[in-house]
View 1 (tube, rainbow, N blue to C red):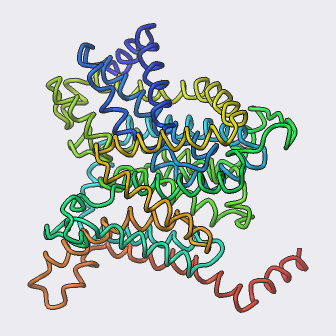
View 2 (view 1 turned 90 degrees about the vertical axis):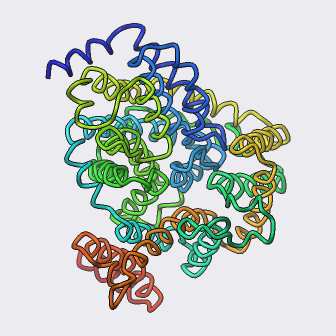
View 3 (view 1 turned 180 degrees about the horizontal axis):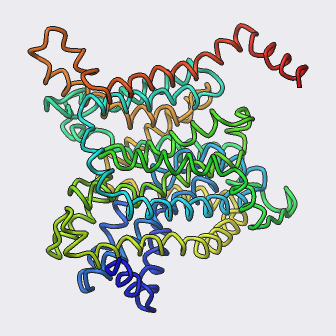
Length: 512
């Protein structure tokens, strides 16, 4: 307790507050740029922390991390482009809200949800880090396979128009994940005798191509901006207090999303890419009005943004206690710790308790600072997007996306892949295949393949090798959740196809 109070005292200084505020603002700006991820934000700003003391440097990077994850919501809402992979689910309802003239309502909801998610993640990290870290170690190859398969059951919920088209999109994504070097065997696949393809398709490249380019082509074809102007929709003022009352008036959605974010965040390798999609799926599944999701339901934005901001502190659990980065940005944080002579483990909380607790509490401060920074920045960016003509907006966004794609690996090949996927995504969207299932398949395809192959390699001497996938209670529980998830998604569709679901609804209406 003394170390915690001492850490809090070191945090409540003018210098510390300014450090975190600058980190949050810089992270928000970078996260809102398509192609510039949280990992890149930390890497770019890392050299500026070398001259700082250990605690000040970690505070700055914690603020950058929190701000960049939240910043992806801005472009997701305003131009239907996830600024970071963890903001994919925010586009589903955020952009429809913006098209209805409710852009600032969506931004305010995302901001409040992000603040709550960030604070909840910090509380979990302070209180439950050691026991949660020991639980995370139980996830081996077979468990990661089932986690990936559980994520793939989300394809049904991301396919509101046609399950078949959603499954086709998921399969396209999984095929894209096989391009390059095999994660286990090391052989090259589907590179067509072109060695540069051995690096595979970077997730951010696919994300930009499948989300940004089709939207830019649509804006150009229709001769419209990303959002309708105020004169077209009429000026719609929104109260921050009314949005907060709506969010906190549905605490189950908020609590469930935060818990999902925390559970997935501590599993090394899962990351925020899956977190927001799972939280969104559960919000839709347990909603009284699931049909409104994807058409501008604020609860979908809340679920996505609260869960992915829990991940920021949640992914620090295996990092600080076991030295295992829970997400790619955490690897940079690990490098900073080692650079200052700090080795992750239980000793980090005892021998360097003031520094560790100060770093954790600074992420809580960063979450609180998201509120003023996000609301002010959101209003400014919203006005810029509305008032910029499409013939200026489209080339500006295109230039930023090309530069962001090239900056990932300094590769013109990535730019070419982005443009090819974008053009294909435009035509796929015309026939009803949405980008979300494709990206989901790309994210989870590699995780599922690696877990499956490693499990079978370990079971090479077993009489029935595939039974190794169910070799412990945790694997069986995850497999059961996969079956349950698939059933809850497919059964209502089957009932609706048979016309039985409408009869049940009519009977419920008569009984009520």
